[in-house]
Length: 257
Image: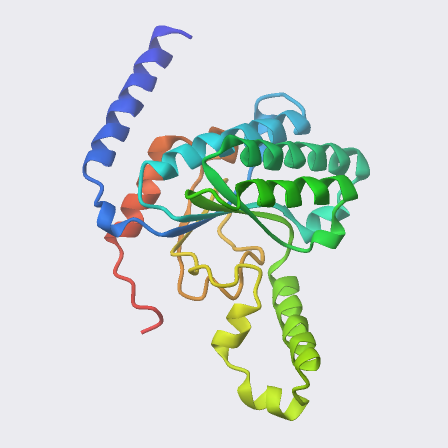
């Protein structure tokens, strides 16, 4: 590292401390959703392989969660694999699944997070399903940030699964379709989502400069604030995180009003 890079790093750290010092913890979001985008483009810009980009993105997760513990964040949802990702070539998908499984295993063994899966478990390989279930069971007692690992996740699929769950519950309880139709409301649908009784995301961060949700938590983000960051996920820094929190705190949330 040359002198210019050292000075730049020092200035970034000093600026991050300044932003953190002015952060109002009373305005920190309770639930943050993260669309971790840009692994492949980061790797291409660095002249390395796609898998190196995915591994670098995976390594960033624990660091990001560490920043969250320094605030009053209670829930973090990490979108690790969408249902659309299953259309990728097997030579990319199979190693990616292995990297994601390692992430879940690491989170489960850390002891600071309570792991919760959101997504369609049946889409995943048997070994990954066992790893996810093991991480959830091992961390069920942890009194820390709830980390939703969105693996095999799609927003439309989640809503379809919620409706299916409502229908099955009604059938098992002997409730007629007419009675069910009369009782369906927003709260009932919300209870059958993957996130269940969790609070909806207050803030959604998407990296890489893309400004779209791509189907992320379509139901839950109706009143969320969005923060689009031009930095690729592996290069996401604490100062970028703090800027997102500062930007969120400065907004006046009207919840559709």
